[in-house]
Length: 360
Image (cartoon, rainbow, N blue to C red; front, side, top):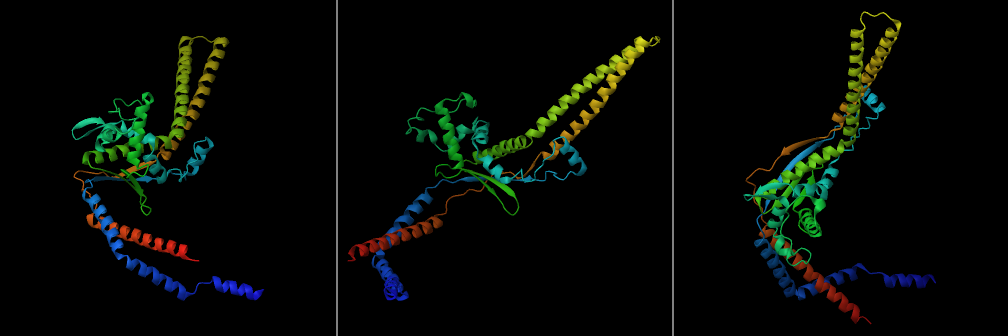
């Protein structure tokens, strides 16, 4: 039994010599069909060169900024006091750059950008329409049944969009963020060492590239800040409303007390003295309540300011922007490698299949 197991193992083993001989055999197979390899290299190199030669010149507009994540989490005694009123809970990890990158490509931000107006090539229009013209989408949509009759966006009220307008909006959103294997127009990146965020828009129009990246940053920063401090703004609004209400009540109580004293200054009856005491008591209670409410308002204001993220703009894109075009040399090298690789895989795959079929 042991000898049989040993023999089966030996039969299944592949020696180093056999492996080397197989590699040499495959090498000679590739050399044998070298003309096919060369033809494939020339074909793919030519195609890549043609693509690079006809590629449009693009203008990459780059904008950089950084996010201040110091949320003043350690506020000491004041922080503890604020927490007692439910105003604390400031997390250093709440503001993060990954969230901003995701938001920059979101449909919410993009719809604000697309339906803002700007001047491109002397024409003031929605950026959505500028993008349609930039990428010649009307010509492409002629082949699409659901979009062939669409011409341009005429209003910015998305809730009133027709299905055709919604399809057009979703399409240009996909174009900008590079969805569906499209080349990305918007490229947000984060430098892991410095924490600096770079937004880049690349189109064939310098004006459009600069305007779009600026508008995206503006909409993104406002949306991010508003959402980050939404709870604190709500708390501050409530405390301020309460404080204002108490102040009006206190002013009214104090005014009534003074009027009473003026109208009864020479009267010493006990019934008037009791009424004066009641008015004084009401004014004192409102004074204490107003003081506490004012303190809560100051704490809410402090929490709001501490929670507000600070987005620091570093560099804006300015004209003229350096033009970029796909490198022809790089295209030839890439095409040559791709052609040689595919030809080699084809030759070796064909031989392996043929040898397998010829085995008894």
